[in-house]
Amino acid sequence: MLGDSMLIAARRHPFFYYSGQTVMQTMDDKDPTLFCINAHILCTRTVFYKDMFECLQTSTTLDGTSDEHPIYVPFQTKQFEAFVAYLYKGPDDWPGDQGRDLDFLRSILQVSAFLDCDDGYRWAVKNLDPLPHMSPALRLHLASAYRVDGWVEPAFKALVDLQNPLPSYPDALEYFTLPDLAIIAHTRENIRKSRQLWMLCPPPMHSICKNSLKCQAAWTSTWWKGLGPRVFHPDKPMSGLQVQKLLEGDEIAGICKECKANVLARMAEKDALRKEELVVAEGLAQMQELQMGRPFGALKAFAAFGAPSNSPQSMPPVPSQV
Ligand SMILES: [Zn+2]
Image (cartoon, rainbow, N blue to C red; front, side, top):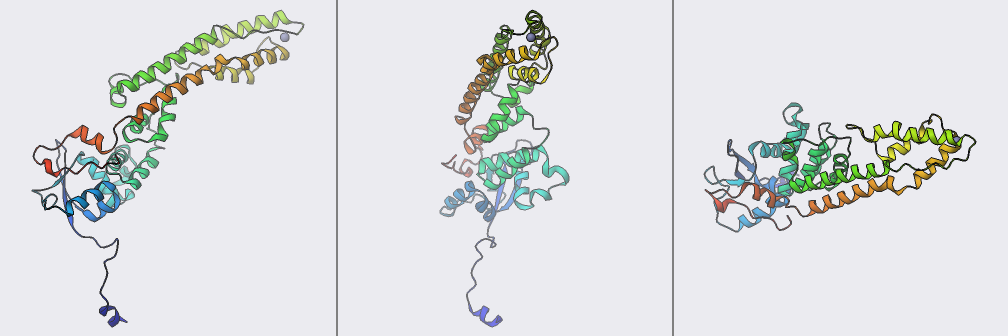
């Protein structure tokens, strides 16, 4: 059997036949670092390098062949290191608990988005999603920067929830652009106005019971003294729908069951209580439109770093799909 196999020309395994190491240098101002990486793995895991190395194969360039002629990659060293660790060592084999820490995952998301590494992108999104320190502001920031479309809606709704504070200056500058802030601030302001409007117009109670005057007086008192402070609370203001649920679930002191049912039915008819949903939906549509118009992946990274002055010919081409 051994003799037979020696007579047949061996084929190259389609995946596990590595050839060619490529030298790459990070464009990190403080810690520029050379990596010598297997080009085959880069090509099979990323669309970006698959396209790039196809171009290089037909050229006589020395790029990537030595430390003196590296291919420049537009990432900080820590970012690229995390991505290479993901590719080579596996995400669970990277120092200690850091395999699940925020910076490590953000780096893999960023580099994967740039290089069009689908499995790295999906793995980073999946593991970032449940992190407890993923604030709504950071979630929207990452959703914007790396086009994680599924994160825009939950992040935006949390950011315009008046019970959640917005990051203050200068932290806000890390997460939001001016258009982001304008849409968020405008939506919060419209929510506040809509609450003030319906709060100023309590649903009328058309009492039918024998103690109607007493019930009406109790309802007026409940509205202004019981609900007003909750709706206009500076830290935890209640929405119209929250007020409605509160009234449905609680006894209202001094109001009989018939009158309570009467006034809750009128409250349910008030479109004003649902105006807030329309305001949020309008703001969300603006935010999603903003996301769609933003540069993404390679275009974004090149805009941030620019081309290296000492070796402009080493910059890989920008793939058309990004
Ligand atoms: Zn009554």
